[in-house]
Length: 270
Image (spheres, rainbow, N blue to C red):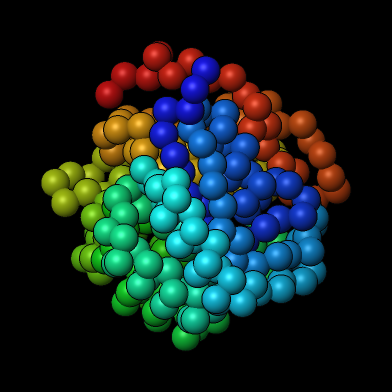
């Protein structure tokens, strides 16, 4: 089997392998594409939390990205943890210069264990510079609250927040609803033309480490393979759900997903 497309991942590393670059590479590979990486930060973490974050110098991040783009090229870009304003500005300039398509931004701000991964200045630059260049933004509820400045307590709040993020310049928004204390999970896709709600039963589990990274990488992979936005969301959400259900239960905290889960993509209809 040959790779169907090329996906550039710009994100931080997770030493425990469940999230970050490690989860991204696994996801892109399993879904049939070729993964390339630019590491923005190295973390010391496990399933219980992030203990240390070491940013990679901006010039090193820039060199990683431009060498990939000048040589191999990319059909999609997944952006994860950027960590500081300097790297956000650097990525913005490269996206503008290379006119990259299928840019998926996972606005990583808070780790599963509660550690803050980005400061307020960086959040302002993220909103102002990067959102307008993104085909898809994938915040969870705490991240959407930070981006919009409003609290989200129910599905209606989610729809309003997704529309507000859309008005900040993103072409599409997938707002993830896993943080609401409901028996059902609602994920809200907001596009310029419609609101689509994906619903599923919440799984009672601690094995949720890296769900956001995995979902955004799956979405970038699907988009890189020329699938439309709705089909990309269906495939990616089903993949993550299956990976949670079959998680190996590693670690003492929030365990990683099973990225190797098999998925019959042909059974997912638009």
